[in-house]
Picture 1 (cartoon, rainbow, N blue to C red):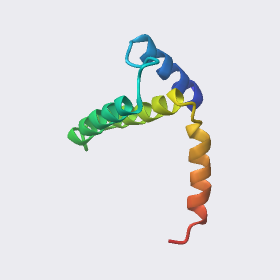
Picture 2 (picture 1 turned 60 degrees about the vertical axis):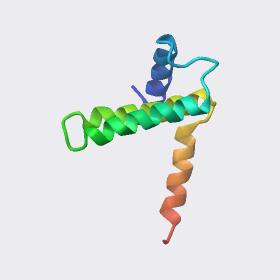
Picture 3 (picture 1 turned 60 degrees about the horizontal axis):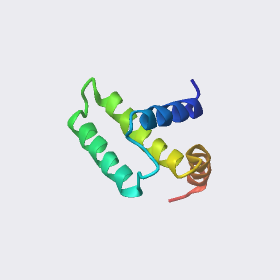
Length: 87
């Protein structure tokens, strides 16, 4: 799967599970992100660390999808910017 397919499929699956709806707001995503970061912190340097890192990324991508933000394009722009930085 491409990253775009992963983002789309995960978003649809999360909506299907009832975890995202039209009434989901910014704060809901932030709270979920905090929950996933806490789980990541608890799993640092364990076999589950990669799974928790994926959960954090998927929440961010779901949030971007919900708000019609092309996060891949933004990441590309930010990478180009970072490559030119001198500090």
